[in-house]
Image (cartoon, rainbow, N blue to C red):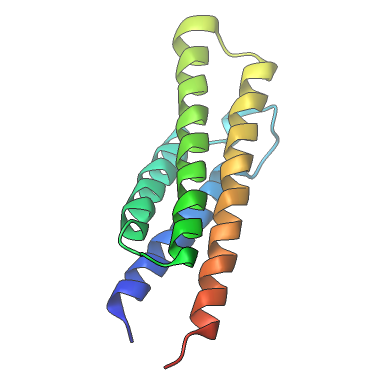
Length: 125
């Protein structure tokens, strides 16, 4: 068993599950989406990105790209939340934008998990 693959896989899958937990719910009701779960999703996504930096393969480059997309989307969601909370005020449009950005990151995380799983399945023992 490759410990680096286990740790990397843990953070990739944890990033997906945290992001899904934040994304799930009515997109127009902010109370159904926890800010601490968004923060945790950002932190875990950043850790997963750091783990992907060392992989020099073509698949590693694609995994890194999906992780960077998820990072940017989640940081964008947090930025919109902060702007809405402290500058413009929260409205349905702002809440929907936050959840939409999270949905984009969720899609990137799903692609990352599928690619990671495919790589694990094709690798030899």
